[in-house]
Amino acid sequence: MRIKAGDTVIIIAGKNKFTTDKKGNQVRTTGTVLKAYPKINKVVVQGVNIVKKHERATQQNESGQILSIEAPIHVSNVMILDPKKNVPTRVGYKEVNGKKVRYAKVSGEVLDK
Image: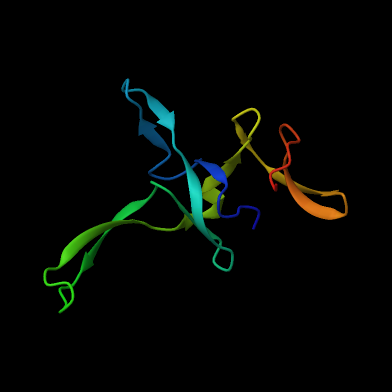
């Protein structure tokens, strides 16, 4: 999987593809990857795919509550944003100083610092 935690991604498919900005225009949704699950090819993106989770009342927590959490989405529904040009890009690998690093194919910018 070419996406890691901390990457800035854009949503390219699904119900959260567009959000409304302050002026009321539809814009593409972006966010930061909080956690990556490479075995199941899913990522958790900050502020995307919010679901409600009902929590039962316990002795420590006297009243039950409804939590809003980010659920994982499939990695094929996101693309990394190019750090230089701010457009979606694919990820490639190249060797720099004897280390294998990820780079953005649009601008050639190295993603791993």
